[in-house]
Amino acid sequence: MIRFHNSLSGRVEEFVPIEPGKVRMYNCGPTVYNYIHIGNARTFLVADVLRRVLELDGYEVRQIMNLTDVGHLLEDEAGVEGEDRLEKQSALEKRDAWQIARFYADAFFEDIGKLNMERASEYPRATEHVGLMIEMIRILLAGGYAYKVDGEVYFDLSRFPKYGQLSGNTLEKLEAGARVAVDPRKHSPHDFALWKHDPKHQMKWPSPWSEGFPGWHIECSAMSMHYLGDQLDIHTGGEDNIFPHHECEIAQSESVTGKTFARYWLHVRFLLVDNEKMSKSKGNFFTVRDVLSQGHSPKALRYALLSTHYRQPQNYTQEVLASAASSVKRLQDLVDRLVRHPRRLGDLSPAVEELAARTEKAFLAELSDDLGISTALAAVFELLRQANAMETSGALVATDVDRLLGAMRRFDRVLGVLDFETDAVPDKVLGLVQEREQARRSRDFARSDSLREQIRQLGFVVEDTKQGPRVLPA
Ligand SMILES: [Zn+2]
Image (cartoon, rainbow, N blue to C red; front, side, top):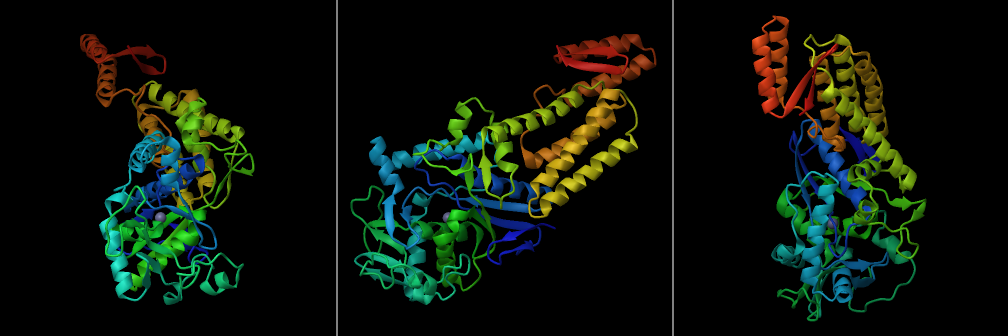
């Protein structure tokens, strides 16, 4: 059973999926006009960790993350539209908007691959789903939830009284706020665009209203419902998405279906660098690529970004990164020591079984309780301390080693920072090593020598130590 904070209720709630055992999760993805920065990476990593915890707990997760490759008009709190990021970047780089979108989408996949994020079930691109958005806008118009003006379509907020349920920004509160430059064509300055008319826009499509492009919010409503159905279990995003983006998604989707759109909303708090907001002008703005090109390992960055609780602002500093690198190294060192530990025959020790089982249970229980990463990691490091001591004492037999490695693999299904393969000895070789040890014990030296030769042919040498055979790459 998993609990986490639902922004819709403002409380930590027990998660109950619509369909038992299955999770329909939608994550607001990147706007592909530039490389992702470490704040974006953290938001996506929380979604990755949540998915991995759900899977560890036995759920089947269908995860959809969109790529916004058109129409992301920046809007300020008052609903005033700003510039289009893709078009602006296109002018800067002197490449067309389609090339910009393709290039930075590819870069996004490379970056999340380096950070070892699990692939979502689908990454729908807005440019490939405009037909769905037009259809949804048509339904909203037919139902009287939207209106046309000069070839554009706006959502009519007065028709959706529940607006503000997620952010607290009800229409009444917004209208009582500061006066804004009013677009006289809109019924309310806070009505938002579903379709924009712009014949000069590089990415444009024909529609019943004009040649133009869809608004940002309609992309997420149309694509999430297309891939996951009318109702989602979990919708995630950065806290800056709560308003207006997610509020608008709710208004659009619920006006179409009459049902609750997403039952749980999980929002990730912002990231600071050296306790300050990241900004290009202050020189403390880092993309994932910036950090990796400084020589930091992607594993250290992944660990650094996932080790702060999602509801705490993350303060990214060089110290945090260095400490993450050292934690990853300590965990990897234990794995390496276990992999290379002499493979002595023997029964699983009750103390090892107790330690491994207790830690596995604590790890999942802590993560299931509002993604309690710090306490989950504390449990893992307590196992690490004890396992290191056991390894040093030479008390471990092969079954103990395998049990401890099994626990580490289980932790890494969520953490995603360890390597079990580099120096790992294949099972086939381990089998031969154990056979050879048995042959030696029964003083069948001809068989033992022939097994040693078979092991050598597989690229490994076996040394006999006081604690048992040790296998090393040849
Ligand atoms: Zn979105």
